[in-house]
Image 1: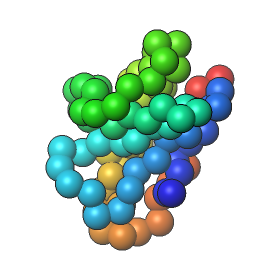
Image 2: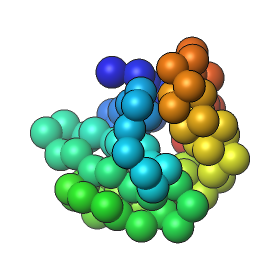
Image 3: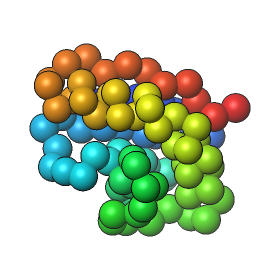
Image 4: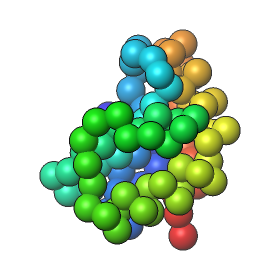
Length: 86
């Protein structure tokens, strides 16, 4: 899995050759979610409320980096790590 960040037990990834809209995936335990980068709209899945809040806070701080990694993934290039939430 092309992991771009990890914090508080949450793993964030952007997969190569994904469909639009630009989005990322997050996993916490057995829960998974896909979130659109620009709007932070949940596309599918769910996370426990606390984990979802942490992911949304992190994503709002790193939208530009997420979009950059999305573009890299679409071109099958190496993704850049993004600072975790601290």
